[in-house]
Image: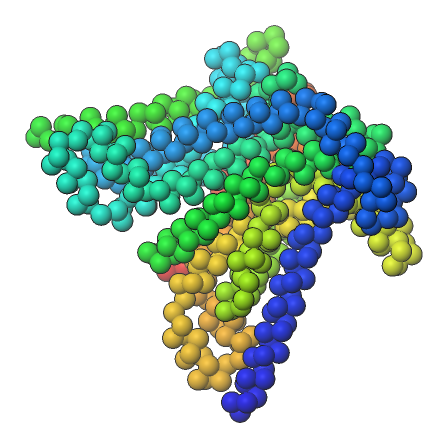
Length: 279
Length: 293
């Protein structure tokens, strides 16, 4: 019977590997196909029968970089980086206060935040547009930065993180005469590196990939965010079926986020494991 | 006493930036929404007329509303179960002591990293009438199938795309939950003679229930709000023949194409109510089994 089980386990392993490899290939296929397309000539794309490009063409990428695309990349970088920095400071400060400082109305405030998490963005979308236009922020990148510079979900995450944070470190710092804000900057923040990194990646990714807010708030092409620019680009090139240009743009838009992910993925997956262990 | 007052001052000063942003960009808009949905608001002329429940009445008599209702409901009903089940199965594969699991994880995570606009363009290229998928179908089955211009299949493409790009995210959530399940439960099941499939059904699935509840909730909330993909695929129209018109897209059209912000806000309020109700029902159904502890 033991032999039978072992045999069963081995064939099961083979099935698991096969399915995992198949799913990985399925995941990669659209991306590989898009990369190959971005190097084809439009004539070859219209023919539609080749797998590898017959003659490698860089026209798609040249067209992209001759357009406003580089401007859109720098717009998105600027907005995403600034938003990420604001989020890291403000969410962490708020989470820290909710977890560690015993002040009046803390419980009430925390419950209010939990209720607000559940309100879908569509409910606030239109009145938010009116608020933004009253503040004269329509068609300014600050409209996106201001409206996304904190995130209740990550405030909640940071609160959960600080609840398990050792108390003696802060007490020692207070003894040394550091002010509470000094303690926060010099002691608390450096010790929360993993949680801050996780938060940072997700905020950056969220802003980099955001589509609806730029669509509502920004109208001048030179201020477009990358996602919005990509959509505009596809509109002007799709009718002439210049998919090489559209695919070149799509692929380039993924690269920055992919690089950040490769560098930091070890960090946040172990972070995930840790939080799983704590529960 | 001085200590307490000092703490209160400190607490609020740490919270000031967050509270300020929440007040201006969340609470004020929510308050404004409650007021706007009973008015006819014209942003261009700046006029506001009280219409009572008129906006809601108009919504219920509007065939486009019912089209968006049907599309969105169908979308949620198909996407949520499929993505939840596949994410759970893939996570348990990755958790089964296999080699290269980090490599698999890295590859599988790419769709979640990709922006909805890039992903939609890639899928439009794959499924357009001269794209890879219709070409493969034609050469294998000899049938010419159109996807994006076909009212019966356009929404299906968006469903496939959403399942494809959401699975990796929830897979990671399940994976962290799987690592919490004590090995002794599997050993006990093994002694009882349960094979791997039975172990999955009788140990893994029940143990994962709290995580499954989280994934279902997030899935329902996310899918009800589908906007980007429908907007890009249909160029903002919700076509062909309203087949990709979703709730959020219709809200956008009402507000920014028809310039009827009052009605758009009323519809957004209904969407919020629907999401809340469905989440509540799912919560109750799962809690009824006492598995959510």
